[in-house]
Image 1 (cartoon, helix red, strand yellow):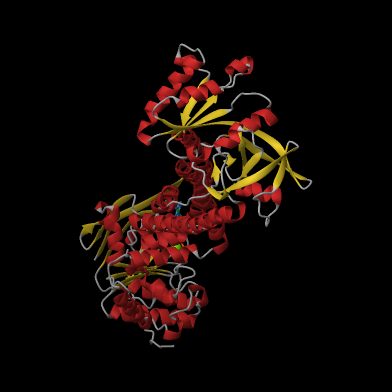
Image 2 (cartoon, each protein chain N blue to C red):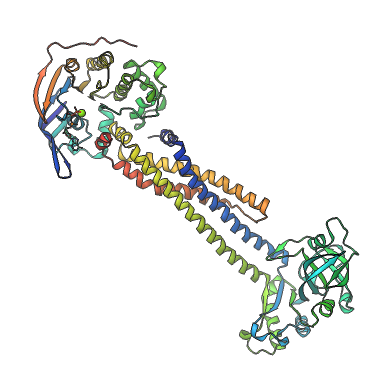
Length: 399
Length: 236
Ligand SMILES: Nc1ncnc2c1ncn2[C@@H]1O[C@H](COP(=O)(O)OP(=O)(O)OP(=O)(O)O)[C@@H](O)[C@H]1O
Ligand SMILES: [Mg+2]
């Protein structure tokens, strides 16, 4: 049979029972669109994680303590000694210790909770933060315990309201007034934290008025170049083992990690997440495929006489197999195309209206359409084979 | 052309065995017009299906143009049905939801004949059985019983088969429509095609040149028609 005739014949049969065709195709549409949209969510998460390598700075090392419930004493904290030891390393360009806390900020009687970071004048440089208006914390602010704050754009908006100029306004952190001296440029989400919803104050001020002790939450280290990262990481580890009096690096109570390490961990998690989503969607595709098989089997039974007639006028078994397979593949491909469009639309809606990062890749579309045609082939094969096996006489006598 | 030698056919359905044909020997020459008669259940359709290469005999030989059909492969059988034979069935002749023209060209869909040539042949065939142009695009359920049978004959003709097999083609038709269908067969026979037709009615059988009567799976009589009835073809 010519391809064109084959398609016409298949279309005629498919459109004969429109309700049934619609419901069967719907199964495939749902399967494919969930594959596309769920994978797009997974890949969206992955690519947003990857794009953060750049925003955080690829030559940033972070030191943090491994918290252990049983040994939560001050000797297990990071201290100024650690900072000084790190500053001596030649591969280190700048060091910015930080104290993080979460406190209520009050402005004109209204309060919001925001993350506060106490740090020094190197922080903006080490973490790639740029100032939009005003200036960042200076070394003089740190030495003289100034009560000044640099705010992120989102934090500024949350605290002061939308259209107010933040510079030189005074906000109350834990009841103490801080003057805003700078606003950072928008930077976006990084992992779990929104870098725009931050308030930076001098570390000395934070330790004296907010945390009440000398401990440091973590240390940010700017390395002179990306190539020196591994070397610098080793040297920092060695220096800290010394200050902490630990002989063996395997029993270290701190972690030195580069941003690449963090991103790698997150992206391996999100890869697993993508796989899981794809697996769930694949199940719905298989269910759709069984729907196709069911419909085709009903079709074969209903069209027994037609098959007998076709064979009696000269159709070979191969002709019959090909005809039924074409019908099945046409159904699933059709469902695949509609499902793809719907899936892409769904991803768009998720991004636009629910702020969920999605990436629709061409490969997932090709995969989905290919898989749906494949489903037609696999689940259509048994019914088609059954149709071809029908004896022309038996089928013509069939009542 | 047709050489049936001691054909038997036994159907097995569970415990029961039905011997539909008990040893039938028939010889039909090219250009003959044979009517097969006999009571219901005497084995006429069974015989016809064997002649049409749709079914295989249990024992005996069926030679078509000197070749034993039982040696054909599934593929060769399909070829044979497609090229040499034209079949008109007792019932269920046309595909539902399909136009008359498309029904007629159905056998050609399984060949390499081009689309335009196919349409031409289908229209020619429909004209030959007296279906006027205004019915060509009708769906099969929009045609009358007589029209359906004639479209079925048109389909049987489209491959220019040398042997036409018709199982009670006038079974559900009134006398006038039957005459019309028979006139088509007589003309085709005059053009040199071999025709085997099953019927219950002696009136119909008398349009043929030879009548074979069957009873209980055996041939009861085989006679030439003396006062053959000729139907005048009238186009409608
Ligand atoms: N597939 C089958 N299985 C079992 N028995 C069958 C089968 N097909 C036909 N028979 C039996 O074979 C016998 C002959 O049937 P056949 O259809 O050839 O009769 P017929 O002469 O064409 O009758 P009618 O005039 O009613 O069409 C019948 O007794 C029938 O019951
Ligand atoms: Mg019969």
